[in-house]
Image (cartoon, rainbow, N blue to C red; front, side, top):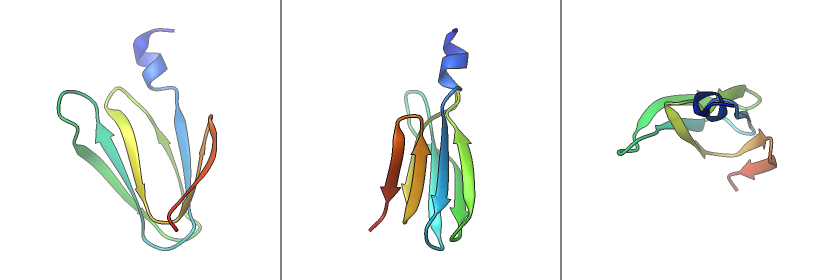
Length: 76
């Protein structure tokens, strides 16, 4: 598998457990910056993908997160 395919093969599912959950996409490279934001209300779901441009995803608020590594809950 080449590097581009391996960078863009991981998906993350985020389901908001409360209104106002924020999701931030962070860039790759020398300077990490926010490049995309989403705001979810309770019950809304987003499926995000790591790409050659996205190296990290930050989630603020109470949410259920599903990855190939397992299930995680964010927030209090």
